[in-house]
View (spheres, rainbow, N blue to C red):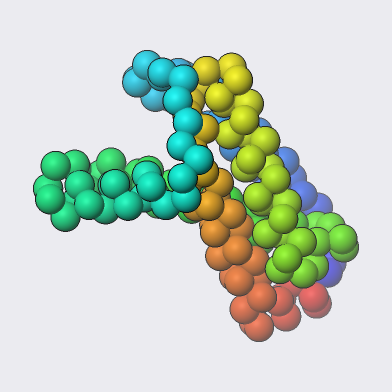
Amino acid sequence: MKKPLKNLILVLFIIYCFVLAFILFFPRLHHSNNFERSYNLLPFATIYEMISRLINQTISNNIVIRNIGVNILLFVPMGIALPILFNNFKKLWQVTLICFFVTALAETIQYIFNLGSLDIDDIILNTFGGIIGYAVFKIPFIEKILDD
């Protein structure tokens, strides 16, 4: 990859990390809800509840899209950038592991400092977002552009 392109991706990745930290650790600055310390350790429970409530029309589409969609989209850039920027993260399992651990750490910090709830479903959705990002990176024409 040409050095200017890699440098640009590095700068964008650093900006992304700051924005991600802002979203994860300063929710009261961009979110109006007051948080109660809570946790969910049952995989897919929150996702199932939201989809059930959506089907029963007891929750807004916007809330479901925001909760599920944003959790996925938050980590797509990480899944794209890690294999581009770091030679140690060229394989799917490596990117998946990093996204999992970063998310698990963020969820734990949110819980400890009462910045949001600790939810295993957020970890699942964020990790899935990283996997989607890695899949985007592996699209042949994108990989070719990045290898030139």
